[in-house]
Length: 399
Image (cartoon, rainbow, N blue to C red; front, side, top):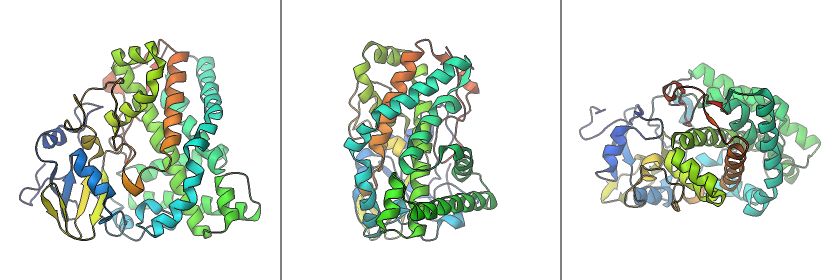
């Protein structure tokens, strides 16, 4: 799709295959690693598809993650609400030192050691939901029966959010993630979720609890608004991304029976397979945005101060200069260096938790149901092309 700007294109979103990026992005990948991109608001910026260029942009402090500086590559009805300053606590849309201050308070909560201590609990949660699927019998929607409940319950327990109220926050999150949501729908969902979490924060201030939010509340280093913002950010990120990786990953493995057979033959491959699935699927399909704070040269191109760069995570993760046969799912490969969790100071805070959840959930599912299969034609699996996080809306399975 060519824009009115010479040499610029708009971000392609239409896919011809559920696991591959849009064909136009793949064609770009074969050429230059950075190209001109026209934004819906008229801004002229850049699209990065090369792996090295992506890592440069995401790690260079001359590129800002600030919300008030960025232009969004996809037309959103509520875009005006996304161009103001970041909400209190939303450190992913801040630069140092504000980002550093908030992230520092959370880093100790998401260490590898602490996430490993959660392993028995995650295993029990997965087992309970598999028991439920078995009792109910086939067919089942894997999203609702398994992929969504596991990370939702884990993040609720970790944060101290009542899991019994999950339908409320999942509904609001889904509305906020929908690219076609109206301004009224988006602001309504944001307002209700904000109010809910603000009340929860006040309750934890009054009676501290033994969980992450309770600990932060007792620490007194965050305002009520900041703590509610942190809670919202972690709650959304903690279940949306992992849930979609779980369901989409199962779909991909069912579509590649040779790779699933390799995992069944050697369960030790699962740890690497999680990294390969992150590389191959890259669910952040609208890209990661950064804005130049000064003129910066990227792969020979001058990115001028104020220009927004969109990093195509999907294309960077399929750079042939970084990975051999990049469009092939290969659970035996080393996918080291992928940017499925981002890169630089904003690299995903909960990546170790997500890794453990995926490793446990995939392994337990295929061990319990060795005959797992799709219960609908592949072309009838509804994909989340309309959402900020890619995946499947439903995944009908049988066994």
